[in-house]
Image 1 (tube, helix red, strand yellow):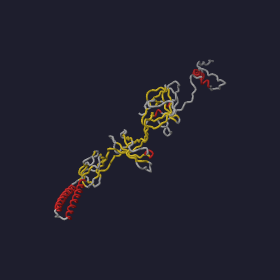
Image 2 (image 1 turned 45 degrees about the horizontal axis):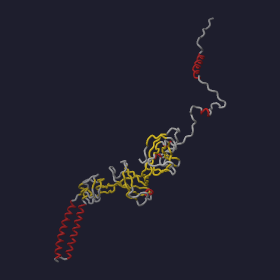
Image 3 (image 1 turned 135 degrees about the horizontal axis):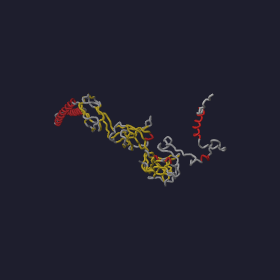
Length: 414
């Protein structure tokens, strides 16, 4: 009997196992883990092991950096930052920018807003009824006081004036004749008085007729600019009806309500600043009047300001108003960015021999981005005009921190 031939290939299961071993063994090659130290316990590292790692010092506590000090928190301004941590390297200078202190006048200012109006404004009305015959000016025209602006029909008024002139001439001649006869005693005293009274009445009638004729002429009551025209030529005009609007804009006024606590610090003739929103520039003004009473509902006092207008400044313009309420002359002024909060006090940093030196100060009036400062009593470093203080990078400094000035910053007072 013939035996079946034996297959030379391995069984399928054995071939699969061999393939798995070939793939797995290379991944398992490498350094075998050290056995656990019984003293340490499995999976735990000691402080010595941590410290033994290459040059990695153990982390220590960091000094907190305060955020911006807001006004609500009692700080002089939101632009200033609290004290920060010193440089991480004792020998690595911190880059900073410095700017000199200056001396100048500083003002405490109350800011509000209002609307401009003309120094004088009124409608120009007809003083007689009739047809508007002719317009002599237009909107935007400048006129002088008593300048002719319009004409009404005057036929009747002119005829009445002519008649009054004739009647006056007749009355004058009759009076002169009576006066001659009176000297010769040829006329009674009663008749003489009648002629005299007739002359006076004729003069009065002539003046009334001349006045009615003049009412047909519309004239400017004051110098100014025509801001509006209400009627066209040919329109029927009633007595007292407005034909034009006239405004005297030689000066413009702003009436501003301010709190009573601010009003007591102001004086007539004092300085003020107006800034029309449409122009974006400051215009000097002065305080003309201060109200004599306080509004019981609002607790405010009306302040009237006046300013000489510049091109583009018109009645009705909206303006921002700055009222100086306090003045300190020759004050020592620092940029606001130089101030650093340190608890309940303020510091500025001065660069001395390559190091930042902290100088405690008290603050006074804020004038724009600058702040008046006064060095604290007993300060080791004297501050005066020209003293350079750190204005950029101050929050990262502490007293004695090495610093490297990069260049000048914005000086105070600019």
